[in-house]
Length: 299
Ligand code: ADP
Ligand code: MG
Image (cartoon, rainbow, N blue to C red; front, top):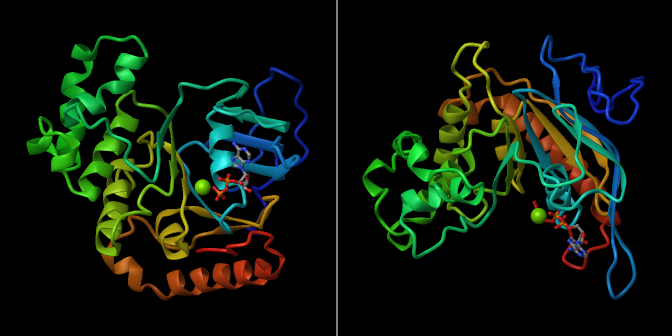
């Protein structure tokens, strides 16, 4: 497809409360899971308004893996919080699975850079926390929690406290916590950013395995939006990479990743990965002169 073709919901008439029509050309029968229409965010601050996002248009298909890259401070985390309904946009609209997002939605599991496990609870009880917070009976979810922990290799650690786990293991546990309620959408904000390179690479493969990339197409994969500072990580994981410009964040381009699935360790040596990563790097470096942030862009 032409880059950016699925970026906008072109020509879709939609009145308030109506389910958006899928206009994405690239994904066959798959419906639109997340639709971002002209989204903007202005934060009021003591120093005046800060415009974090401006006129973002993006459709994410059901079961699609989309990565977001862009300079530090361009609004990636803001966009993730807006999709989750934690802080609604100040202009435009976001739709998730056909419903307008105007409050926190239960359809998402979130994973952040820090694992954010409660240190006094066991790993298992940390994974069960969302169950308790949603007023459901944790006993009904114990088997599922154990299954997820086994799936990520933490079966022998479920009764340990987080301090007894390595950083990578803690992040695996936080992934299980995000998955326990079986949300159709995973929002991951630099989830592996604090891990060493080798562990990060392992976690990438692990994530794709959990996502189910090697299973048949009929398998209902989760829709994933994944923020990262690492361009090669974005390309390795995603179906499409959304490149954002410096603040106020806008969609600068949307790149379709031409790498076959399943992606395996050898995929990292694929020349296409290097080529696309370099293209994105060059594009981001081109915006560097316009970056307002004191720290400058980081990727
Ligand atoms: P990124 O995740 O891409 O680094 P953020 O979404 O965290 O960017 O922030 C985008 C911009 O919005 C930054 O300039 C940041 O300082 C500002 N910002 C983020 N959250 C708030 C907030 N709660 N109040 C005021 N400004 C904020
Ligand atoms: Mg951020």
